[in-house]
Amino acid sequence: MVSVEFSDGVATPMIPNGQAKSKPSTHATANGNVGAVLENGHANGSSSNGKAKEEASKHQTLGHKSLLKSDALYQYLLETSVYPREPASLRGLRELTAKHPWNIMTTSPDEGQFLSMLVKIMNAKNTIEIGVFTGYSLLSTALALPEDGKIIAMDIDRSNYDLGFPFLQEAGVDHKIDFREGPALATLDELVQNNKNHGFFDFIFIDADKNNYLNYHERVMQLVKIGGIIGYDNTLWNGAVVASDDEPMRKYVRFYKDFVKELNKVLAADPRIEISHISISDGITLCRRIV
Image (cartoon, rainbow, N blue to C red; front, side, top):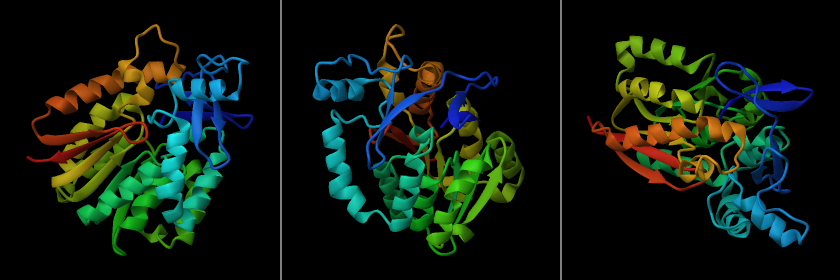
């Protein structure tokens, strides 16, 4: 996720110093699958030579939500294995979020399903989520936790969380959420100051400002238990981690690209963790604390 500013109903990503980036363009299918288009409003290689070529070029554009080789393959995955098992509350939240002007910030349905399975396999009970948006990943996790499970959810802006909150209530999991509005670093520092929180959390999911991922890492390493998991989202960053600097890409993709690459380098060398870099959605890196 990135910070956004709303003006006339349009969401604009914000870089850390508060300067607004150019307003994004996206294309969305009827079921809410979203792909991003280049800054000039056109997909790379798009032409008037037919719908098939246009769709293929959209998929190749840096900024597409899925890293699978085609939209058709991604839709097959969703329609065969994800949507049939998606709870009604998650489906409703997904459909609501698809109408949001910056809907590409949401967790994809297949990643939500993956997170739910992971939490269940771990028998996780106490978790943290940094970066909430409308709450698709938050709801996926909350549904997977036991009745007395808890999530400390952090976001700089409560307004998007409030949009999704009725679906947390509908699912009967709103009592599991402790929402903290404000900069996540400050909230994490408060948690770290209390020794009771050290090694207390089973799972921590981070999908927020990429320029702070390494700052988050040093703090959450104190909070996650040995054997617990930290998940960093967007670690393949729209494919931009292997793109040359002269390739066309959206401004926010270009801005955060080097931060993501540095994170990946640091995680790969961190002796305190075991990692698995997974190519689901936009890339997620799982870090298991071992010391």
